[in-house]
Image (cartoon, rainbow, N blue to C red; front, top):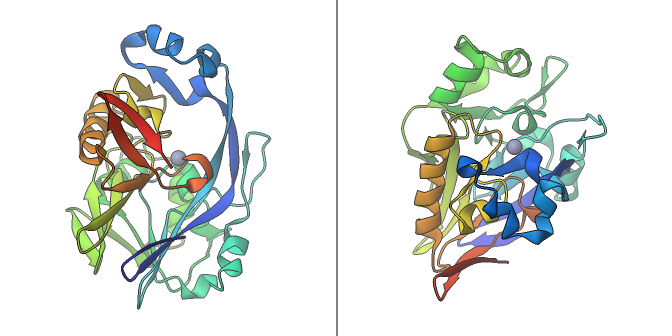
Length: 265
Ligand SMILES: [Zn+2]
């Protein structure tokens, strides 16, 4: 757990996904030298086991779940199903969650929003950016799975169109590119800050080096610009950050020594 003033931030595991590095990231502009710089990635063939899940933010009067995992599935690649147990271990029942804040509407972030047409968190307001709602639910390319998941919680959905504060110390910032409405969560207490990055970066490498792109970024150019901005903001390590699929959902800091950036847990 990470504490920031009155906020507690707890990783909530739902399961894991097994992928090769090349299924997740690729050198921008197809610059193969980027692979050569990282022998540990085996030219993209290295296998990664990445966490699926989300984060619980506990404030004095709110229980905010950031992202809702993939849900109870196991198809050999994606395995989920632990999220409700993980909450229970912390003494939290689904009915106590006040807000489900979705960083974006990809399937591995909305899995527990509903199950077979029944809202999993009956008392929660489901929040996401209006541009993701437009893209995944209402637009021409609407995703059937997303529509089905969210149709049973429609009356509880509140979309936001501008950056705003949810409660003291918890605000959302539009960070597009991975998806049109991708959002990061900015947590703050006094001068201290921490960022929940969603899938703006899938691994720290995307923040320490600026010539990678996410295979699933819908708009790679915008996603890269967003990442560059965040990377500069994190430089020096004053602000901690964690992505939705970073190892063990652990926060880290972006340190710079002799112009070399590295990610420190
Ligand atoms: Zn994801």
